[in-house]
Image: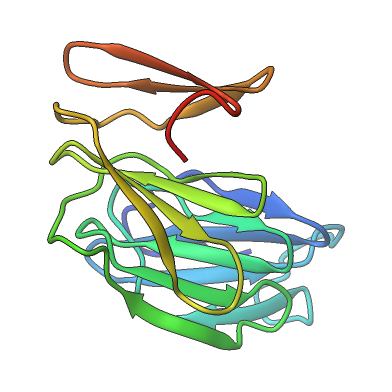
Length: 170
């Protein structure tokens, strides 16, 4: 399909029957494409929807369950229906102003968003914006968290945090 005609720094992400591509500079755009087409699918039904705000220059979006979550460089969160692009909420704000470079991760019905200001925000996944917890990590975080074998790894500016399921902060 035709490119986004902007700096597509975030990685494309995929969910059930959808691939989401985004760009946040100079133009903000998110495009959802149904996989499996052939040839140039720009003007076909393979393109499910487009959304022209709420994207970031660096952080990638995430598809989790039936929704795609976009995060801006300032930590504002938008939730869209992954198949239709219907806006469930937009501009959800963390409890403190922040900057984000890391991509969010999802686990156990939650999203984790970390900031260059040193905070980790746990959001409830779903069509309603809700911050469940804010965890100050004590140092800037620019790398995306990783989840493996029941452990959450967060690389800060000076430290590598490992939080085991049921044994750390939520």
